[in-house]
Image (cartoon, rainbow, N blue to C red; front, side, top):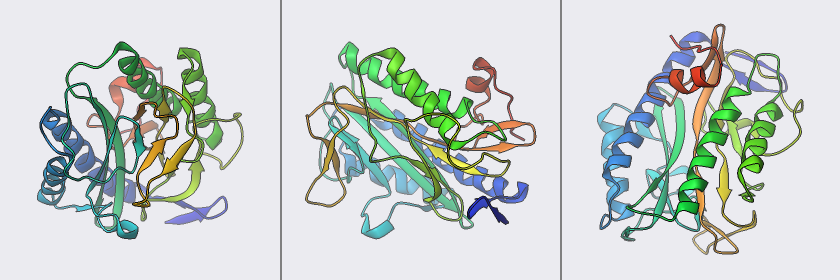
Length: 272
């Protein structure tokens, strides 16, 4: 492993392959959870499904025990933006739940998130989810070897702003990832392009827009984890881990490596 550009962790192709294995565990687990979400299931039950899925695939949950976090996933419902703790809360028709999942394979991490509607939700909530997911992919699509981290940030913000009046969280951002779940550099979801660390082959990043129907301000509850919007507005959160290879972009937590989405956005696919 080489380190350059102020201590960034640059992976060899073999190390990226291990991250892909971790990413597939995350992607498969999130798809299982997407199909498990329904009215009447508790977030603790979703957590148990996730832990079994991760461990049955020979991986370890990244989140469990991380600075004392008690769950294998984060389950953030409605006005909870991120870091919701799985518990006895039962999902009801009309809720939305954001599920954040991480897994470790042979010391290498994968990290991704999605937001799932429970039954029917208002049109504005569906639009929030669509906008947030599209912003994630446009951020990833903006990454090019030789570019800068805030090229991603600018693409995320530009898409969100083009879709309506949404709040973009500034206190919580994406991040580098590899031998640890959180590494430099930070990847904000807003900002001018052309700034920050240089994007190079083998740098792995987790991009994760967190968008609300209201303002950007948040508060942390007494459990020291759960982040809620201060105005009570609902939120959505999507995330993928990706890297750049010699042939293009590889989304390590997408089951198809991101090939379909990248093709639609005109981005060369870099998977193998």
